[in-house]
Length: 512
Image 1: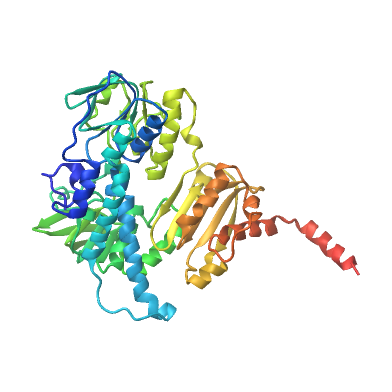
Image 2: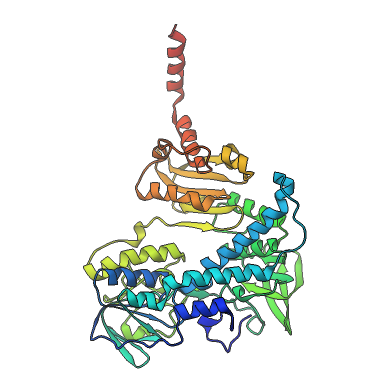
């Protein structure tokens, strides 16, 4: 539940919890003393999420004088309220579901009784605390980075202030990330709602969880909580979940969520929220008219807003938009030539791995006058539902909007031997090619391990390897990743012209 008296960055942690105390001491130590600022830094990094941490570590490793500033918890959203806690809970929910179906599907033992939701969350907090040391203040100090904990604000084109200290810089990188967007729904801000920044503080399983938003976060958590025994209702403004994905992919995920007990309301929106103590009533308007959903837990998953507030960007002549974030060019440079930005604060694609690669571009661009382009990055994405949806490159909608003619090769997971043996035949691989060639423009994989398979397609696109090269690469048998090789085989068969087939037929008829 949102607690307005707790500073925002710390609402993701439980008070008096051993694991969360260990995490806090790693990424925002109580006894931390900021160093004395040096006369001038080669690079000052504002924000210690993935983009900021990677930027600082690369620059310091090259010998630069680097300062890193963080007002909240080092590690950012990924560590505390994003990738790490959510994937831990998703893994637990998958284990619960596997136990339920073991007897019927695999002849396994019959699972009886309920699970321990508190233990699921405790395991998550322990795992998160174990990973926190890598992102911690002391580790970065040992890497040669001057770590400053506190609020940063720019005071000129080449200075910023943290507490009483003034940091002068030759170059700076803004890496302040983004926060959960809260829609303007009457009564919502007075309700005890959650976002991804607080949902992982739960210690008791919700009886009824209502989720506003059917994007990746909404779908992942809807299915996970349903598998953990919570009644879940998902409110979707559109006509399908995962609106950025191929419609067939979204349909498979929705069917899986429905089997797990999630109720999905399409074409609906929350018109107001009524709070009575710890109970919320969400008024939903949709095709069925108006209805009132009573719940004990409300989760808002309606997107991300870049963190530009409080930085005094005007003082540094840095252009920004409150909704779109810091304005950068293709080299990630802002309107101030001394200042760059990386990650969620400047990108419409808000992924941890993209922030990481932004950092790998921004260091040579900022410190060595290189001209690496962010637009050349090939960025995959994964939604970690069961089955997973992984995608890289162009979708059908992109092809239409960009007026690009494409060929499409589809292979069902039911055609892959390992998927059949694993009982994981739900899904497909779709490869979108430039018309008349094997140049890969986009790949969508829906399957139990789609996220583990999309990197092969991403590598091929990055290295400009055609689908034929994937088909010519030996894959171990039996693996589910063979689905990409099978897509190549299907393309090879299709590209053989009928005239050539007739010539082969004539040739073999002539052989004795």
